[in-house]
Image (cartoon, rainbow over all chains, first blue to last red; front, top):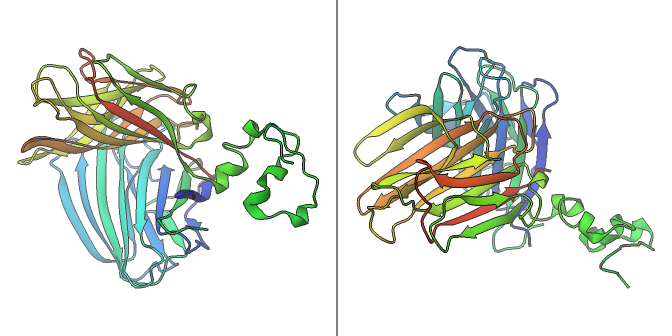
Length: 178
Length: 217
């Protein structure tokens, strides 16, 4: 039995505002999302964040994010945001960085199809360019027990740059999947 | 009878059954051409064990290559390295780094905590940081850890990045950190050499490294 299977991969061939995985089957125990991303935001010594929403539910106040991060040589800090329209993931390279710099973000989504638990997201990522460095990890909660069948991603300030890549995996447990 | 070295379907496609008849989807081909990374690459395990190294003596460079892997690294989008090591340099605690394709030109950003304070740093580097480890003055038997994701290793339009969680405890002392490193090269990754960050000491006996591949769809 496979314990980790590819559900879908998306590689962008043009700049794109949002990336959506829909029709996610409920046949896995957990989901794992891996990204290699860059944003069209263009800020000196900057980077962008990625907004994550479930089941086309953006625009409400059902999301929260709890983040621990470190920027260049600043003292690391924690931050909590509640009542948000999206969970925030960090961090995407932006246009002031070298054109070859796309940054990694890893996301795990636990027990996404249970139907009786609020949906929990854990993510970690970082970026390092010619002038700054940024690392962050954190968790988010979506105040809904509805099983996740759709994931939508969009950069906080820009669009995803062509070449950004996203793969969604399903993880099994001791019960057979598929 | 199904031959293990070649496949020749002789039934109507409409009668095929899922994975059971996968073999018939690759007629007149050697099994080795589709068993890994072809049709099975999508419906089989996406997470594959590729290389393992358990040191039996102090070693200057721990080398892993695509050529020696259970499956070529070119079949995967990301690699994940689990490091459990120690080095022989003077002192209590340090890092292991990983040189990709024996190349140079790296940068790292990290943030870390040692139990009493937290700091962030950014610096040019000589490899992707993959573990925080005890050094020669640490108690015998103490080893440190790291989990590293090497992202999009075969995309020759992108630099290769490494994202690492690492930690090492020494009976109450120690460091835990998250690190992001970039190798400023767009070459596909085909080998890695794991060394002490000082490049002046061996990686210690009994250190262990396991490399996995993550496929794309």
